[in-house]
Length: 294
Image (tube, rainbow, N blue to C red; front, side):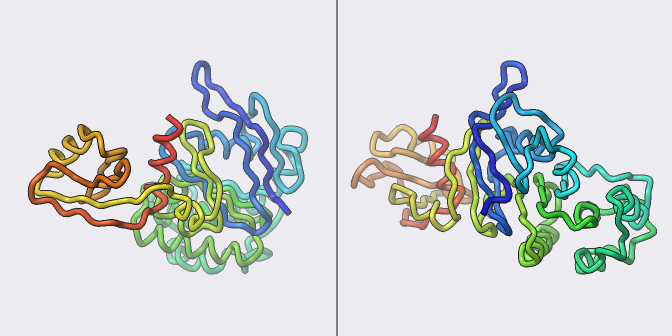
């Protein structure tokens, strides 16, 4: 059973086509990731699902309700955490939480068990104004406010952008617990390493879905043998690789270069260079799909 169904959604902003016939399904109780760089269309899609933006064409349902006809029902069933911190900066932590509980006709006490593990981490700062919290603390407070009415679906638009690595790791541990509690979690991110933490992912670029599958299957479908290269001057090596006819694809990946050859000819005309075969990552798959689409 699908909790979110998206069919041929299109959205334009003047001459810019932000979403191009996007079709996706998110299963009940699934932790699903929408993976792509800034400007790929992730926020537009999340705003449509949150009933804050109308699509130009196509349909979408959340928990069986249409995003246009049944927007009031959907707003009572979702928890939405936008990419930018949008809580009341002048209110304290507990005042923000109490406000959102009141808006949804509930109380902190009634659903405290759902947010307890998260709230305990920020409870020592409950009297502090939200605007004075660190990035990681703001993130936890926003998640508490999105959960306080016990939603069926949690929509998280790039929730880990701008927070430290420890806070990112803690946040994903929280999401796993929410999934275990039966909440459907749909999360977008530009961090490719977070893809492996999802049950399934969709890779999106320039408003188009490139691939939808489990992270493991997307990696398994990588069609080439991938190599890793390194030299004293990787920039010069990269320039050399781009000129060689036997090189299909080359790009920077941290302190190494990734290389895909045409056929069996693995000759590289560059001195003192390391070359070894490596397993592809989701990021490698994304780059290959992006180059193929273009």
